[in-house]
Length: 111
Image (cartoon, rainbow, N blue to C red; front, side, top):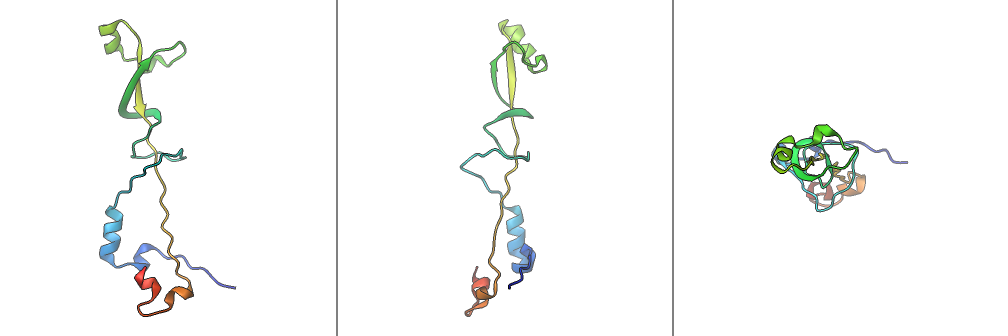
């Protein structure tokens, strides 16, 4: 039976690499629905502060989202749509099992 240990980045990497990783921003080519919200652009429309688009008013829409300035100019009701913010979780897995200690330098140091 083997035991598993949990290591943090600072346990395995030099401090200068850890600082670079902390400053790193990753983007995604694919958008998926998530449970968390944060500061990345989304194709979904939500209730953040970032304006995304307009759409025609339909009965039952929230009147608080009507752009009244646009209504004054066009005499038509339009809703303001905002970007929904989402977080994306990123997991970096590093094999720290005993087999990674083989070789010189070890596979763990190389990874």
